[in-house]
Length: 79
Image 1 (tube, helix red, strand yellow):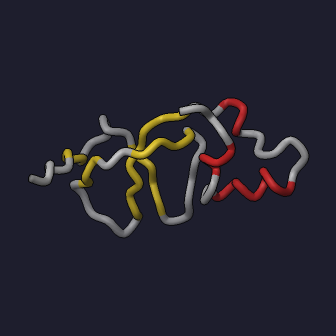
Image 2 (cartoon, helix red, strand yellow):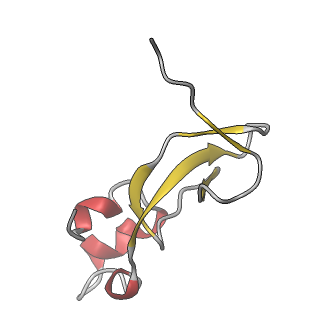
């Protein structure tokens, strides 16, 4: 997957891609990683359901955690 500003959709700072010359200043140094979205209302353990996102991606009320973070369980395969 290549790094595009489509990965910024929904990010708190995506506003700058449309309203600032040159776009968001964090995009240039951002890397694509796999993270699981966890809401601030959710209790551990969390299921590992990875999605590609940028290292700078953020949303109000959410955290994006790595697989090696504590309190993650692998989602069970469905038969």
